[in-house]
Image 1 (tube, rainbow, N blue to C red):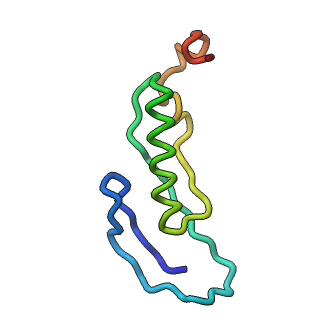
Image 2: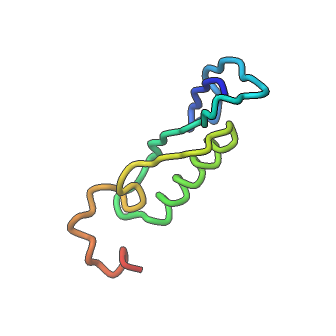
Image 3: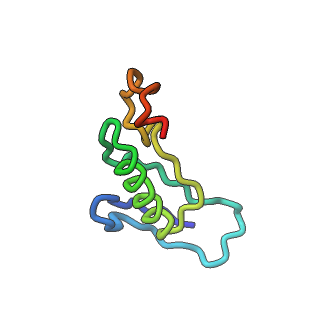
Length: 87
């Protein structure tokens, strides 16, 4: 599969090793993301996660992980029962 590092802000591949065309080793490419988020801004955070996931998928990632509570912006514990978040 090869190895690539992707700058998800610019979308540029930072480093890449050559890929085998017939990979029979059963490996898959995994990507971890840390998109910029805004506390309580679910619409923006979701858009950022989707955008970063598309970029990771474009370079062949089959499994993409994002931070826990990334959609809500992490520190919204006091806001979990607010109607805005529940919608």
